[in-house]
Length: 125
Image (cartoon, rainbow, N blue to C red; front, side, top):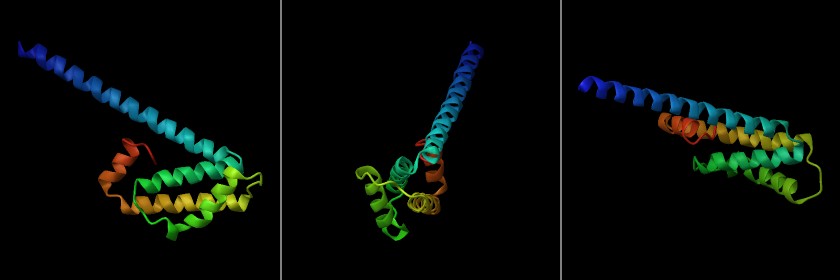
């Protein structure tokens, strides 16, 4: 009887949609938690984490990071990772601003499909 087959197929479809929605919700929450951890980290850790996030974004967009302040942000990241020097608020802001420029550039470069994919499949922004 086709009624049972249709009911089972509809049920499987609804369960798959619910599972996908729950997965997206959990992954978006995980990303927000990671970004909040960057925001709340001390300058040294936060600068290094934010630079890493900017790198991940730029790798997914193939943008020219040099024109967006890469050299200065890289130097601060290197200092944060490999020196005993504290990272100042200004240095932290420089890296945060660099990451924001990367995100804006990514959003400008990505097509609608790429934005959706990076937001709801790759969960990178």
